[in-house]
Length: 175
Image 1 (tube, rainbow, N blue to C red):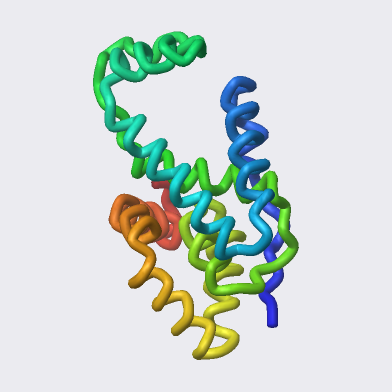
Image 2: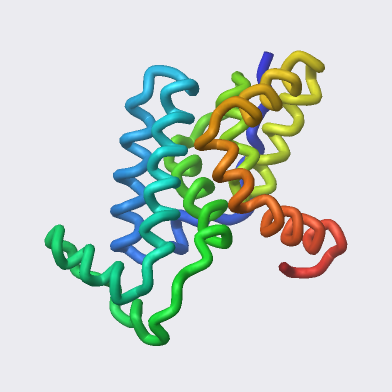
């Protein structure tokens, strides 16, 4: 049983700056190496938790960390020396990684649990459609969300942000 993923109306990946595209391509390649969605989910959640910790640092701390590992920080990253709200970025990072995977359909609970986090309506609508195809599908996704601490942390991180933006889209306004 599967739920097709509609073609994307807009690409997050295509609009990203080139250095970020390289990073997103690298993340996608690491996720794609997973033999199944159980492994892919674990890898993607771990990477996103690492990014959340990175973005929790001040721009100055991020710059120092990047310089220590031999990377050039993005220009203007420390203009106001404020922390970044990763909850706003996470759905875009997830969307860009999933874009690169370019999968045609949702086929498992682990995959649906990740696609729900994407900013792309096509992604989370396919996940929701898969969950609704069979009550056991929805139950399996809810079980994963309850039992996977990494996924639970990411869901809690973005929950209110996603709900606010989706409500704004449903009401016809921009977030």
